[in-house]
Length: 274
Ligand SMILES: C[S@@+](CC[C@H](N)C(=O)[O-])C[C@H]1O[C@@H](n2cnc3c(N)ncnc32)[C@H](O)[C@@H]1O
Image 1: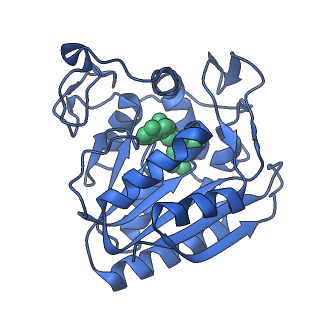
Image 2 (image 1 turned 90 degrees about the horizontal axis):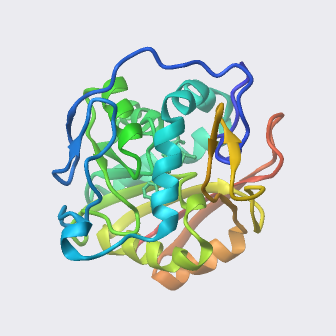
Image 3 (image 1 turned 135 degrees about the vertical axis):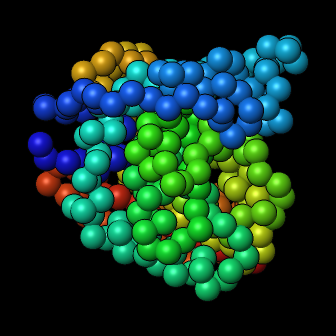
């Protein structure tokens, strides 16, 4: 099977030979105290403090519900499909290595992999010597990450309301995860990243370059499943502007030309909180 960039994978391409995961899921507690069941599903939606939204009379935005449901559905097949994909991305790995170096040098806190999916990037960062943990919207993804990398910490959560104290992190990686947030919500997400990063902390975002919503309509085929959620290609200049407006300073930008299985450039932006 030819592995593809995770951004391409996020855009509705069904793998030709996706395998079913054979292993079971962990049962446990997510990072905010809600139950993660045997199959990785969560028992309820929670706010930042871990209180059920229903108990507070709140509902979450429909794009979060749709994204969670979609990734819960494809989690096992997605995991198999991207398992070895980083090995095919030397430029992406170079940015991750640079991120590890600057976060370790600043030494102002641990790093969170936000939108960690099955945890492969979290594990890569850990192997490079970074103190890191993963956060993802999808309880089923988190159950898989915990099973695959039991030595690492993974929590259910959303980048729109992180369960992290102000200035508590030294780094954030958002590796093809901001692509599922509507562009008008990016300023709020970057403000949230700014809030939880300590001064001197770094943020690395990766995304597929463009300026459009990629899903063909309300329903699309992903990894052998029919799902309904949005994914966006993003313009690096606009994302860089928004990051500056959130208070970050630019450290570096890398545009990777499309690989054999990719249709667009891949954008990587590394910024620092002053
Ligand atoms: C394309 S996958 C990338 C996963 C992982 N970074 C990787 O490269 O394997 C996008 C991931 O972002 C997660 N995600 C989407 N929206 C999120 C949000 N608001 N907060 C946290 N995670 C989110 C999805 O559940 C999914 O696991």
